[in-house]
Length: 416
Ligand code: AMP
Image (cartoon, rainbow, N blue to C red; front, top):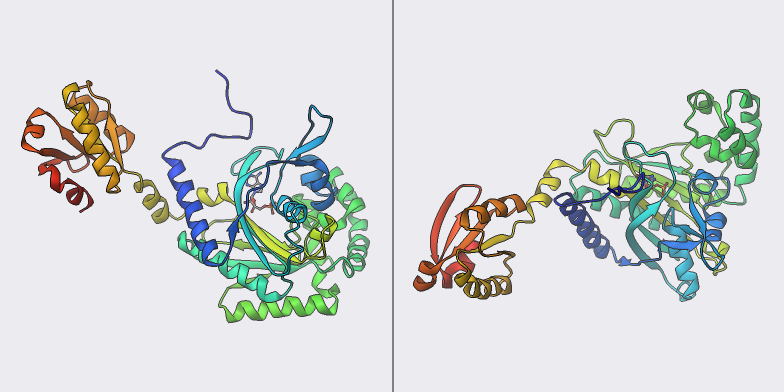
């Protein structure tokens, strides 16, 4: 037997019904907010992520699926989707056009992480990006959209964790202050944090090492080093969120593990999820497009971990999604009944009823059992007697009841 690659998994029915409903809901809500779908390649030039996500990040440093293709190019399975979206917009000249672009995506991402519960090497993200708008109102609107989406999935107790990481201009002074604070603690750091301390001290704030975490509460805070414009942006966002009744808390050490962020960074958490309560992360990236050779174009976006989202999905949404697939099994009793069954299936499908036409010949007993296993909740049986009477027998496989219904009334009966 050939198994799947470590850290990847198959998503199978009926679970795929849940994934499908989540994605349909995303499409619906994002469209209501004026977002259109974008699909970018899974495979990108390695350089794209080195330049944007950043060399000192864990993602680029040790988690990328990078290989040299047969043409000698270094390519990488995308570890995230924002860089790809920005690349595509620059490549197609779509950020030159004046105005705001609102795009969303859903798809697999790849990171060579240690597989553990909820962390995979192939995982899926649903995300959205707004390009061409720099104001705090755009940040607020994006968060409002997220609350709308997560609310429709049934999540409660939602809150935004928020910070500002400033700009490339004001950050260096903060980074040096942070380095000066952290250096005396180098003795308690492992190789990873020592490397971060040297290359990009900001990344030490992401540490998972309890001994290093211990000293972070005393560290200098970015919010105290913001330039006036970044501070005004941050404060305006807080005011807008208050107005919109979006609960938030300021997390002075939230930096998120990607280097391209400027100003706003955030996570959204839901109630009742325990320590790992973040459903998504995001932030503003006002330099990303220009770093990729495009015109100066501010942007902001988020990425939801779909695996995690589905894992902690409220029960009511999950159950509704599972129940959403319930075709009617159409069983021809004898091979001679098959042509009539085919014709009846076409009529029902044309009326919008999902029909699973059973191969004839198994005998009704076996056919009904198999239909139940496939998730059918009702069956329509057609035999010689029904054909002659112009009727069909409808069986409810759950309630174990049955009724003989004239074929002319079957559509209405099944829809009722
Ligand atoms: P990031 O792209 O690192 O900002 O992460 C955004 C979201 O993607 C996180 O909140 C996680 O839910 C999800 N995520 C990131 N890495 C993984 C992974 N290896 N497996 C599953 N979900 C992930």
